[in-house]
Length: 227
Image (tube, rainbow, N blue to C red; front, side, top):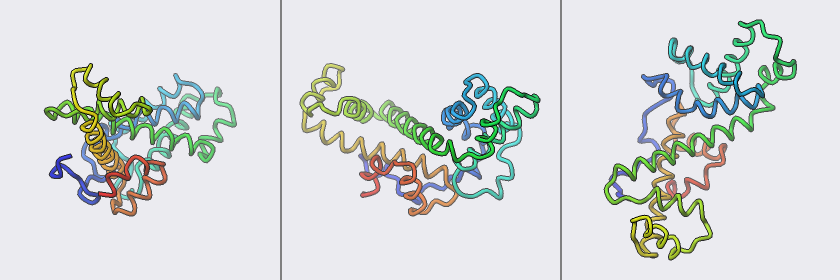
């Protein structure tokens, strides 16, 4: 990886509560919100309706009282989407929601782990897309192809992986594959750290590392943090 492209923790100044394009930033995490709502409401159609209502409100009003917000964006969203679900049913005077589901909206602890899983999956998907975009925009770069192959087929030897890539028009030696794989992991970790950092208002190294640990992402980012 070109060292001039490296990003250190502390170099990113974006804070979620101060972003200018609120709707676009929130849409990043729509898949996580939808999965969470589906887990709570147990109805995909209703979950989509609730999410749509929530996104419309975000588009119209932005983050409610965002000047006073601090901390993690995922904490803000989990409260906001639950409140949106409650408002959805109250506005429709719905009786279709069982009492236990209403309880799960009011008391989120039961679905906390599912929310974290959905959030983590969303962050990883965004890091993968960033790596793919990086490959497409960087001449001769193969990071996405190399890391994707290594992740999907971890039992492949370097020689076997290099042969598969050669068949796809990306010739390289086994030694070059190993070197490129190390660099691809560091680049992927960098994108993932950046994504996590932007969801925090307090962006010290300790806060970012704590969030990475909380989400179980440390195995993905150690190559970057160690540098």
